[in-house]
Length: 163
Image 1 (cartoon, rainbow, N blue to C red):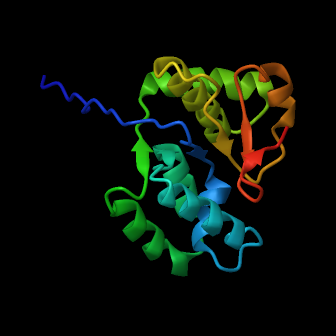
Image 2: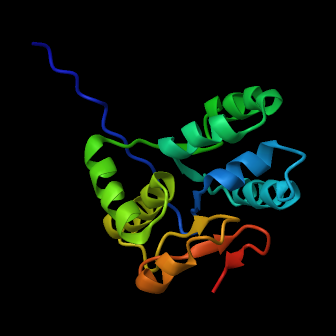
């Protein structure tokens, strides 16, 4: 039986790099979103600083389902442009780890995947501080309470950590 092997993926992670949550990606493209201007300013700031946002493939899929239909084509065109964003792949091992996190902390799988990516990138790249997750969602502070040494939630509106 033929074996399919997914291509290995690597990307540069800079000191201002940020993981982007679904709500930030959707707000960037949806002018009716209350966080639209903050998301635009934040992602455009990253571009000015030559910091490519990191987005797990699960966030792209979730954003496609949440983004208003009339804005989806803009999002897909933007995602396809080299240098706009770095899409992080996910394999079955990552989903097994994230499922454990989602169950343990009573959160959804995409948020658990973001936590996994933040911790994995921080560790593999030997970052001096945890890779922040840029989000407008404040439902996961209970998780931060358990992982405050290894997890940073970033507020795109103020371009700084929530805590």
